[in-house]
Length: 120
Ligand SMILES: [Zn+2]
Image (cartoon, rainbow, N blue to C red; front, top):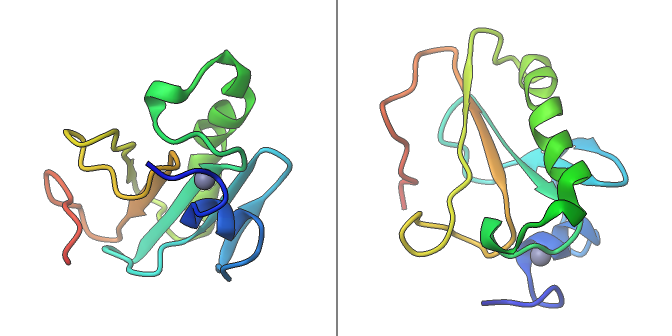
């Protein structure tokens, strides 16, 4: 489990690691995945370091609400105009990679498979 200091996603929030941003405001950041699994593939994260959904609380409701509320608008803007998928993997069982809650938005143009496991 990593803290905010050495968290990859916090480094992206702080600009220590460059990212291709899709959206940015005071609560959330959205940026393109460096290893896209589909033509549209970006990640939405809260700016605040929240390791997993187990650690989420009502204190972060604005950030998590925004992630869902903006997903469709951003997906459409990025070209996923006929559907997309969001997933929040949590913990070992959920195959979470990177312990800062992140919500991928993955989309077409072709229909996705039943599940997406990242190709190594
Ligand atoms: Zn973090």
